[in-house]
Length: 487
Ligand SMILES: Cc1ncc(COP(=O)(O)O)c(C=O)c1O
Image (tube, rainbow, N blue to C red):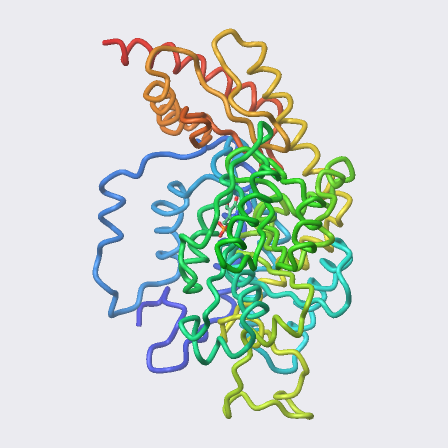
């Protein structure tokens, strides 16, 4: 065995030298804290050199490598080429920036190595406490259930499945949807995230059973069009079963008129699910919470702690008003999962009864640490600040002769473009140039058939100077891109 190897072959996988592993562990912790502390000095993102890509095609290691060497490889070949969403200049898609207590909690969770499928241990209580906190935030009853999942794509799928059980009864789980004469139809705005259509696909109901309702000038679901679509479907003998409201659309951050949607769902006796992937937790921000009025009436809410709440990836969540129905949708008793009244196999609520996963990690811990360390006031203030920054960017766009605003700014998302010939090509080039410059990383989307530069200010580290740098770089790359597009 090489001297520096901290693990002894032929034995268990614990270190042979605990003092040495402690020192190495502290170095690793220091390195990642240095990375976060000095993140601003790095490029947001940088292209991956071919030589680095090639390293990740090497064959499976059959022998050992000492931990320090592997960590060094991480520092040189993985860390510099990550997405960059910890960086204050990252404004693409909807990525949270993470936070240090959350990261440390993730390390503790890995040390405990708890499996949150079920059984009687406090990590399950931690997850239940998060459910309890969300019940408080959204005014849900104590009978509401909650579950950590990977992200809102999964949470929305679970919401669709619970709504399906509600409409077709628990029998659908045994007999499948082919056994029913009902043709279920769901409704969401045309601005809904693609994972909603995917949830319809995965639940066996089919993408075409999702009505994508046009939006109004504020990018919210058009209520008249929605009512008309429901009426037409009923006339055609179809069965409306699910209305999905958006609390923060992915493209523009628009929030549907949730209270009105709740009224429609009640009148139609259909399930009211809200995709609040990033917007729902704005309930913690007193100036934004009023925009979410009506969210309290949802039957289920999908949300992500890893977006605006800055919990390290991944930490999606589903909250369901009718906890019993939620359980009925997923619980699958098995002899090897027998519940007892005493011992480790006791514990009333096993999370595996509320979703498809049996083995589950301790996502709740990093969320619990984040909420305990910062509190909802500070998290809410941070969310408000990102919206202020979006308004600052909006003003800069409106006052620039070179830029054009493409959508109203409701929350923290600003869609704009550089004016010029062939603007789609021009702006796509500008965004790629921005990424490669390492200055800023917005993404793109299509607004009314026009390609937009889309800046989603989600990161708690973003400051006005990052907005200034984005605008300056867009204008600079705009001039260069105009020249090269014309050439
Ligand atoms: C509105 C909306 N819904 C759903 C999702 C999917 O969430 P996740 O990426 O956590 O699966 C996103 C992601 O950005 C989103 O913005």
